Structure formats: C-alpha cells, structure tokens
Amino acid sequence: MSHPKSYLLMLALTITAMHLSSVESLTLASGSIIVVNVLPAYLTIHCWSNTGNDLGTQTVLDRFTWNASIVAGRKNEVYTCDLGEGGLHGRFSLFDVARDWNKDRCGFRNFRCYWEVRTDGIYQYFSKSQSFELQYRW
Image (cartoon, rainbow, N blue to C red; front, side, top):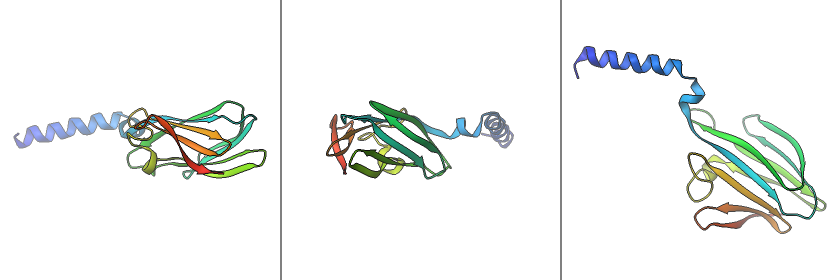
C-alpha cells in the first residue's frame, strides 16, 4: 500500500474509533453471575468488586443475579461476597476474571457464572463437565 493510502486508512480508522464510546470499543465480554440459594431459608448476600462496585446487601429465597463486563485496558473486576444463613457464614470470591472467564467455567463472550449455595458449601457450575462442583466449604 502506498504511503498516502496508508495514511488515509489510519486517519479513517482513528476517526471511526473516536466516534465509538471507549467502553463499547474495548468490551471483550459481558455476562451474568447467578447465585442460586438451595438452602431451606433466606440467604443474606453482600457482594462488592475490587473496583468499588458495591451491590449492597440482599436477602434472597431463590436467586441473586448481577452483570459484569470484561473491558480491555481496565482493571478486571473480582467480586467478593459475604454469604450467610443461620449458623452458616463465609466470604467467597464469586467472580474472578482470571479464574472464571474461560470455556470450562463461565464461558467467553456472553458468559454465565452459576453458583449454588448448599448446606455443605458453595458450588460452581462447570460447562466442561456440565455439573456443579464444590469450590468452597463453609
């Protein structure tokens, strides 16, 4: 490609990129984290990310869901959650991009991370084995 054509192509690409929002142009994936309560009572959940996104305290009988995005050039969010019901209490990492964003766990482009809270611990769904596997004990 000749020098003027290369310059014009780079200029066109730069102008196009400037018209896209930075998040739109850099989002690698987005998806949901779903926590399903299998306990026979209400579950108290308080989740927050290492980037300051606090989801507040929730009391759920069945499930709690939130969305997350993986954006190039931005610190990857890790969501930590305090879970409790009766005598069961613990703090767990329920979404960590480095651990969960892969085909065996949550998937890639439109990922879904499924967790089940049970009496013996916290289980995560693995798409590779198509089953829930114990990740944390109370």
